[in-house]
Image 1 (cartoon, one colour):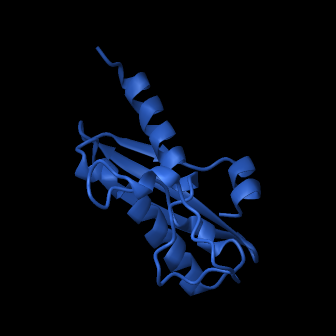
Image 2 (cartoon, rainbow, N blue to C red):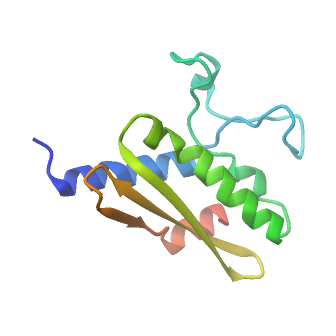
Length: 132
């Protein structure tokens, strides 16, 4: 039997993997070169269009603007949508805060199937490594 703590730990791991694994860029995404990156396993999904990770990496070299902030929230929500689709959570809420002129902090709140809320805030080390 899973405990509340083990469920929360598993969900936190799923969020970290989903946000900070590079999802392959779409063909119309602006990229710096011809590399679309992404996880090779997405080339052969067991379920059509099932992909892992986020496109947050596309924002690594852009100026932090209101549009960039909206894109970051969209990419994060897109990456976590599977948690709802697969019935692991009832809702995913993304928030963002400009920490300074070149850093955006993302926060995630999951509504668990019990109705409880699980708030996940990235640690400062993630923000340094990923700039988001």
